[in-house]
Length: 234
Image (tube, rainbow, N blue to C red; front, side, top):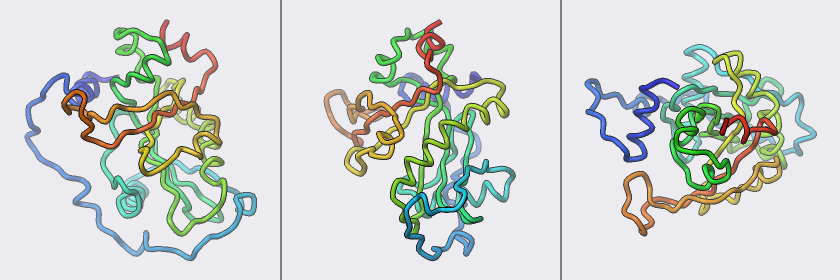
């Protein structure tokens, strides 16, 4: 993990304050909606009736812009750059994009996760890059296929480690995601054998103690290695 990424995470958690950037850039404001991401005909069938569902890594500027556009147009959080090392995917069926995923650097500090792992501050600082955050997961609104989300998560859990190794030279051992409790119940993560380990307190990064200032999120984890605790605490 680079020094810059670590410092940005520490700033996000309110531990330090970095000087403002010399050049302000708002990438979300540069995302223009085009006909490429316009709504498509409704797909309404069970997941087993979909032909050849597969993951395809986002490669090159053109695919990157398309992924950003879909996310900004249809995901409730919109688009913003993923932090640190990252991989983005299109989910394809019959040459049609039906869903999108984005994985990036994990949260610098998260009490339920850190307790679940049982590591020290120094161990977390050294091994945090072995945890990858599922920052975006979008099934396009015209795709209505029961159990599709859990199938995609299953495909991802079998694929991500190998892709991460190819791109960054090491394999992550744990996936995490935060599910906004008032919007979703995390059914697809439960069906895909992710583990619910707790929830955030709703303080936000710099919110006052004891006061809910941002939506409460549930934290789900998925071990990619059986001995993930040993790896993260060694």
